[in-house]
Image (cartoon, rainbow, N blue to C red):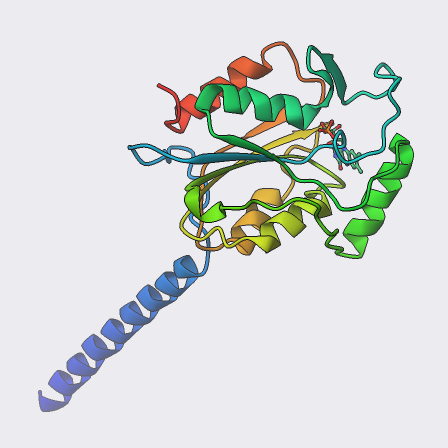
Length: 231
Ligand SMILES: Cc1cc2nc3c(=O)[nH]c(=O)nc-3n(C[C@H](O)[C@H](O)[C@H](O)COP(=O)(O)O)c2cc1C
């Protein structure tokens, strides 16, 4: 009887230890990762200071004034002149939620020729390069929401976007990613942002086709409203 009691006690102690170990493992995992976009997650209520950050070929490439927009699929001629897809999307977002607009601008210019940019983009990604940036956000501390708008480059973010993320500590801020592409969507960029900014909260953003279909602004507004930005 005594032996049976000792055996039972031993079993209880062992199962408690196992439970505790699993709990610790769970805690360790979640504390090391950003709270990534659960699709129902919303921005906290109250006012927010928003920075809409974008990267685009336009504003970074040495494009000639008479650029052939027909041959350049991702360029749009608007009232504001020639714009890249991500500038168009960033301005839609700013129109809906307000805030400040910031173009990630490289210190060096990208070449005008699309296929040369493509090759350069691939080489930079393969070299895990961090291009030097020409402009910096003066008061990042004052923003609590960073909406990050970027093109998919070789199934990833352009390396200048990595340079931007590396430059700032976005801990405690909310990041909302928007990505335009020829079809690859985000690829793994949301997980990457989560790893680079483990203490940020990432809300569900949107993948947008490089054709910017007519319903793009509606889709952008619907997503912003889904995550609680616009009522
Ligand atoms: C260097 C480079 C690499 C690209 N790689 C991809 C890709 O891997 N997958 C994809 O769907 N689109 C890719 N694209 C297309 C762009 O993501 C798309 O045209 C985007 O909307 C361009 O935005 P922008 O006009 O603001 O520069 C690439 C474009 C460039 C210039």
